[in-house]
Image (cartoon, rainbow, N blue to C red):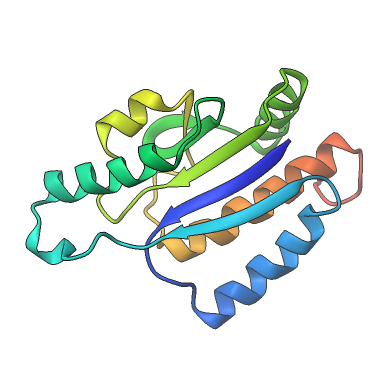
Length: 157
């Protein structure tokens, strides 16, 4: 299964990139993993929040392929433990999912049309994090999930 982390927003700061590269390299041992940054919509400042979300949503929906499994990160989504995330990854692999897309929305969240397209929504926390840090957290958590699935010494219970 190929996993792609899609994120709407700007490039990472150097210190974030360094952390992501570490876990991205480790993840390659288990799965084909890539990060795709989706630039903010042009003239975003002149749009209302609903218009901006709709424009970002259209970008995402246009990029998705029909067979893609979409996991949207949303504050109203299901909270998962590391073990539950590992089970989710195993279920996706066992069900024949060819490509799992993990989506981090824009500054104001994910448009309703994209959330309707998503097969799963997940909340990382009740806290609000900068998108750049979420990219690092998700990359590390996916690595952690794969170490759990492979009975490797990384995650402690």
